[in-house]
Every structure is written in structure tokens, then in C-alpha cells.
Amino acid sequence: MRRVAIVIIAAGVTACGDVNAALERLSEARHLSDDLLVEFTKASDATNRAVMADTDAASVAFAQESALAKEAVHKDVASLRPLLAALRYTDETRLLDTFGQQFVAYETLDRRILDLAVENTNLKAQRLSFGAAQAAADAFEQAVDGVTPANARDVWRVKAGGATAVSALREIEVLQGPHIAAADDASMARLETRMKAQETIVRTTLAGLPPLVDAPSHTRLAAATDALNHFMDVNAQIVALSRQNTNVRSLALSLDEKRKVVGPCEDSLRALRTALDKHGFRGGLHPGGR
Image (cartoon, rainbow, N blue to C red):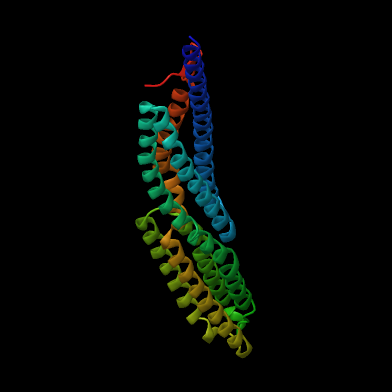
């Protein structure tokens, strides 16, 4: 009888140890499941911030933050999988596998978004428009405004010519904004055609002024021509950057395609956590498994 009692006690101690180990695994599985959703959300949010950042440094910093969070997701998955296997939770393992497949699709799209976001070509084009292009346009206008007609009878012709040239140049400057914001090549092409037409007006009008102005004004017209050439050089840079359209494309992907992969990932992780919450000790002996 004594031996039987010892065996029974030993079996009870073993069972208790198995139960405690299972409980610890279940608790850790729940913790990892929670952390998975947190890190996935952090990765997605960091990518969104990278897309919306207004400086190159901020875009890069948020992209790095997203990368760290995605790395944490991979670590959590790697740690959770053996726990579910030890607990013999086949349904939960299936949910984790489903998330893993969905996360591969998410990462593929996320890399595309971040690669575009950190290039910031639209943002760079906007800075040029508000900076160098505006400065060149101001210099052009100042040079043209300083022109003096050679004869009194040509005053209004010179003033009208100068006003026409300045207005046409400013029209190009105005068109830069819509070009930077345009989402498709056809819209950009139409804007570039309008820019080219306005450039023709500026150059034609400017070429007709020398016979109408006094000698000192020829220096001002030369300065105006230099300012015009510089403006058009900057405008070409703006158009080239805008054509790459990386900010617009990354935003479009983030607002449209990304939600299609984020939602299923979140659903799988929430389903996994709900499934783990249903497990517990029944009759004080063992966690509910399969």
C-alpha cells in the first residue's frame, strides 16, 4: 500500500508539473500573440508616417522604425510557433501560418511603399518650385520692370510687352503645383504642353523688346534672359522629379492597396488571440487542447 501511495503521489506531482508547464506556455503564447498585433500595428503606422513625412530625414527614420517593428513580428512568430506545437493547438497553429503567409504579402507591398516614400521626389520638386524657381521668376520680373523705352511713343508697347512676358512666366510657375500633384502621365503631359506654350510667349515677347528700349536697358534685358534661362532649367528639374511621382505613388498605395493586406493580417492575429483566450484549465487538471 505504501508503494501504491508513493506512486500515486509521484503521478500527482508529475501531473501538477505538466499542468504548470502548460499554463506557462499558454500564458507566454497569449503574451506573444498580443505583442504580435502591437508590433504589426507599429510597423504599419511607421510606414504611414514615412509616407506623410515632410523631410527626407523623417521619411528615413520612420522607414527604419517600420523595419524594426517588422523584425519584431518575425521574432514573435518564431517564438510562438513551438509553443503552439507543444500545446498541440492545431487551429491556432493554422491561424499563425495564415498570418505568416499574409505577412509575406504585406512586406512585399510595404517595401514598395517605403522605397518610394524615402525618395521624396514630389517633395523635392515642391521645394524647388517654392525656392529656386520662385527666386528666378522674381529676378526676371525685377529685370523686366527696370527696362526703359527709348522713345515716349513706345512706353505702352514696352510696358505691355514686359507685362506679357512676366505674366507668361508666372503662369509656368503656377502650373508647377498641379504638375507636382498630378497622379497620371497624361495630366502631366498636358501641363507640360501649357508650360511650353507660355515659355514661347515669354521668349518671343522678350526678343521683341530690344529695338524699343534705351541702351542701358539692354543690360537689364540680358539679365532677364539669364533669369529666364535659369528658371527654365529649374523648371526642367521640377518636371523630372515630379514625373517620378514617388510621394503620390506611395500615398496611393498606402491608401488603397495597403488596406487590402493590413486588414486580413489584423483579422488573423485577433482570431489567434481569441482562440487562445478560450483555453483554460478544466477540472483543475489540464488546459483545453486538441
